[in-house]
Image 1 (cartoon, rainbow, N blue to C red):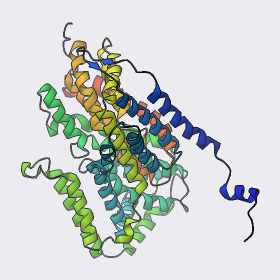
Image 2: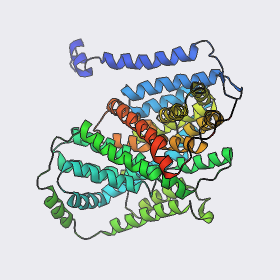
Image 3: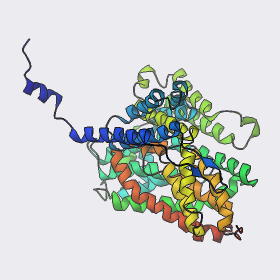
Length: 497
């Protein structure tokens, strides 16, 4: 056996990536500075209650800083960063290992798993191609119209089913469309716009009804407990419908500016789509079974919100029944388990763990109180937008339900003194909580879109900044113009101090 020289060894291992090591060290530095810094001052809410930042809470913030740095710059695979989140909690006794790692199998993570399986089944059975070819034969050859058709379809589906399931269903369809656009798997502007856009508009569509995500129903229940006011399904949809669809069309314009496709027209696509659809032939038994299982799953999850007898059924349990059914009917087999993007599953597992960690240690509450205290003497509009901004930022890192739950009680205490109605606080929070545009962990559609390999986490965050500014402007428009025109009371007589 010949000896390997030092030079050859270096060539095999490749050049040292100093930038990666610097960013890796930067995350560890953030952790160290926060964790070992002297105690931070207590947060004091408007009622005079003290919120101490304990050692465990400071540890949660330290992990939060490290994870955010590593996720954005992808210094290691995003799933590996998630594993490190649980590991640090256990090693530094921030939470017990049995609690920290249990969150990795939270029902929300398993719901995402089941949703991704549905997307896989659509691809394997050929349903994806049927949907893609049929849609392209309708919207035509202009890439701007393909953008619009995909976005409208995504948003509309998110009115009726969980946006996670919508993203998992749309993902393979968009992969099929992009394959007709480009000859290789290399990233394109059209591909970036298609997949990032799908993630964004899935959020915009999901705010319109209670069926798009769990956050709406939980927030309304939470609001009723605090304010003793019932907000109905139809009242929520009435106020959210114009905001959701304004965002869909504005995002279409946004992506036509920032990700203008390289080709304005895909010549001959419409006719080619019709021919390829015809070549698929009659529907197969597996396609029919898949559609039946998926529709039954969607209908059963939707009916939970309207039929009391079904309310006790767990939506994750229903979703996983569909997964089991696919294997029972031989639509999927053991080899398909290897195709599941475990990196994405682990990403959300870690996101759930850090979210619960921030919540249970009191770190998130400490942040909320300190932030909202800045607005205790602010004009009403600034207070509303300050609250919305906090929820928007927090929901990019932790569960959007938790982001609302930690900030809503504080905001509702301050609101009457500034002449702000509680309802506008609730609705503006729900708008921004549904659209985390900055980080993959903010929502499952973001992470599912990332699996396309069309964009990096850094690109997602970079373009998420102007998109988030656009979202805040639309929130301002809703509060200042649209909702008052629709009859919502936003300003009330201020309570004297």
